[in-house]
Image 1 (cartoon, one colour):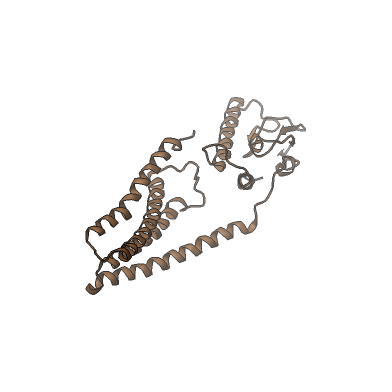
Image 2: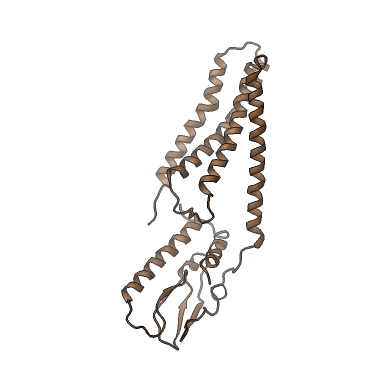
Length: 272
């Protein structure tokens, strides 16, 4: 049973379990597997090559198997990682043959009552979704960039209303760019271990993405406030633009700083 196959079982179970700690459920299981792997490798090192006969101890990506003599059947309880999903009382066995260890019987998913497959359409589904929103953001980025250039190029279009429109368009553009940056940073490789990825680029891209989304909503609010001000009063002052700019670009910074502080204080924890 390959590591990818076993990891697939773990990730499938992650989808049906509710998180009970600050650590993401998927990472909780992966970190436990890594701890058990280190413990097993330490055991293997301590055992050394005490005997060249029989089957040597090894880690099969889920459980640790001790040294055994040829013809011996070793039985192990369900790996501890599966107990995080549900109580398992089953066991798995391997035969030590002259050709080495046999495959586990019964298979882990049968003995430990876990699902053995991931829906085949899941990967293609998420790939399709990513492709669709990438195309959508790209079209939006191009069209909005043209619109901003038009509003800036023609002097007759320069007014308070279009100034606010430009700011709103810029937030949509920045949100598209932020999504592309986040995808490039977090999902540049299918082999990226997102549980241990804690680089400055990763954190900065997520913060930038959240800021752009919040700024977008605040400039939508500014659009509404400006229209409301036109209905309530015909008097207009350029000071309103400074206030609107502060509301659209400045207030999101305040909330983002609070969010960063809470994340750093409560969840910025390294696991070893």
